[in-house]
Image 1 (tube, one colour):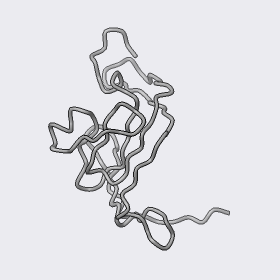
Image 2: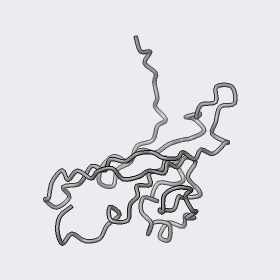
Image 3: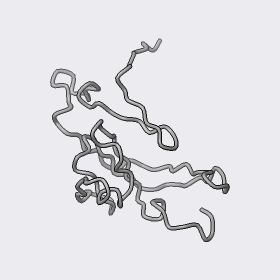
Image 4: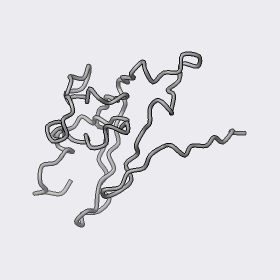
Length: 127
């Protein structure tokens, strides 16, 4: 972290990633719960709240922050240890007990203001 850098989500960790559904794209920081009308709920292990509307939540503890660049928009890589999973029963396939990607309708964060949907999926069988 840079000295004198503005206070950001990185100072409010433990880490709290979520799998975002198509209706829950912009809830990536504690202030987003107020800004985007999501509901904060307590986590079981970490201090940071989870987002009630998220179908999957991971509670994580911070291990390391690696600064990629001190330049404006340079960014960091945040490395954490997952200590608890929360998965909505409604997205679990009852025959395989795996998350059903079609029911999840996950949205991935790209860069800047860009996101990607996971509608175009394919499988590769490992040797």
